[in-house]
Image 1 (cartoon, rainbow, N blue to C red):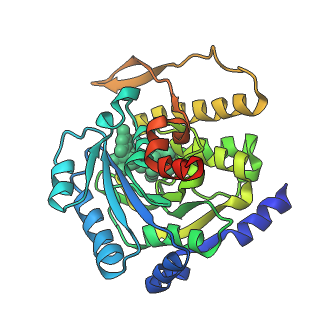
Image 2: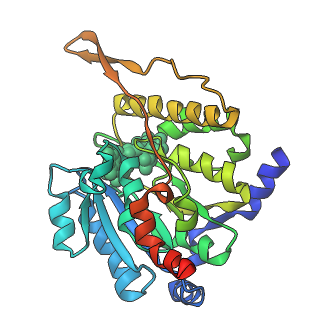
Length: 333
Ligand SMILES: O=c1ccn([C@@H]2O[C@H](COP(=O)(O)OP(=O)(O)O)[C@@H](O)[C@H]2O)c(=O)[nH]1
Ligand SMILES: O=C(O)[C@@H](COP(=O)(O)O)O[C@H]1O[C@H](CO)[C@@H](O)[C@H](O)[C@H]1O
């Protein structure tokens, strides 16, 4: 196993600087007849979303036509996120209003799942919209391996992760759920994925023909579930990772990340049930007691946190009608 992981790590780990001749990427994209969409998940990101959109669009749409589409997939923000995005002229969707016949669930994964439906390209890239040090590399670095190697179907970014708490910024320390929950669990149960440096990174993407076949967890389990599913269905060689240098984002509180961890553990347990084809954990407790401390007193806040998933987008008739109807009629005549 270790040799397999080391070989993968050597062969499928890239650096963003390998792809900074963006004109070459555009040429590769056109030679392969591919299109590329960027979907931005956002929940109350008014502080950063405008700079994220402006920076990426200036470099990767206006200067170099690498991206064919940029959309914002909003989670019903209550701040100016949508207003800012609309003022910059990009399509804005509220995920709760997309495919309403399937209901609306809270969460980042729901936004990403529905972004498959509203975008149209062969390759979909996601980046978080709370990136403080945004740079085009967060997108072209993920696109690069997909254009370089047709056998790579899914690319994850990785980076140094400073941690900003209050006014203090430490050069490392971020990625707390990654280091304390996700990577330990993957090392325990999916050691083949132990070479993935940032399994939870929000900067990643892949080919539509792969992503549309995967289930999506609707909350913060989405990254974990997709990574495991791509590995299980397409193999480790279908996955690559790219060094995006450093990412500074809005760090959530430890309490918020404790809930995120609770979700990610559920995601791994669900994937284990699928691997062993047995309902191993269906009766586990999903009502979390969260310790709160206020005014010198402790109390327990009880919150039910159940990570749900959505079926592969390809199973939706609405999706097939949008992407395959012509092909189906071509075949059936
Ligand atoms: O229900 C949600 C929760 C989060 N996000 C977005 O998903 C990205 C990552 O979320 P967050 O920053 O909360 O996670 P963290 O990076 O702190 O783990 C950010 O762009 C959020 O705005 C979203 O679109 N919908
Ligand atoms: O990597 C992590 O531990 C968490 C929290 O990061 P920080 O400790 O606030 O830097 O952030 C990631 O996790 C989320 C759940 O997968 C992703 O949605 C985020 O994009 C990613 O930043």
